[in-house]
Amino acid sequence: MERRQINEEELQRLFNLIGEAIWHSQHVEQALHNFVTLKRDIKVRGSVTPAEGAQLLEKKQRKPLGVSLKASREYGVLTILLQERTEAFKEERNWLIHWCVPSNSADLYLDTTRFALMERIKRLSNEARTIHGLIAEEIKEFVCSQGISKKWIMETAMETIRKLKGE
Image (cartoon, rainbow, N blue to C red; front, side):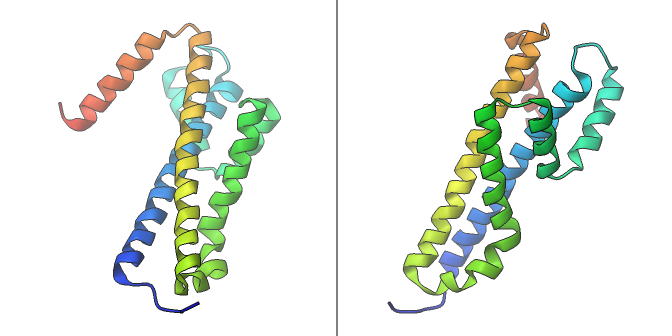
């Protein structure tokens, strides 16, 4: 096995993968914070004012993923399978955020381990996207059970996106 330093192109790719994984991980966190707020704190449509709901959500969004996962497990927010999958995801996310550099820096000097490291980060990003979608689907089901129509949800989402685009 020949050792060599990571080249500029590979380093840029690594940094892009890390950024992408962190970005999508934060989407998972936000979705879970939203769902915990809805199911644990608000519970029933109309039980709090929009301003009170926004305050509850703002408070939750400052918490780390682990806190919301614990609340989710305690209050049965996610389905059991999604809860377990999200907990496993959290461990991998924690590896990226807290342990990747100290435990995997030497991996950058061999092609096989370098590319395996990049692939692991890519898998984390893909899993974040999948989990985010699954949580969003559970949120939609819960909200619909409270009398909100899927049509309204989609129209509101599309209008928000149009505004963000400046249309």
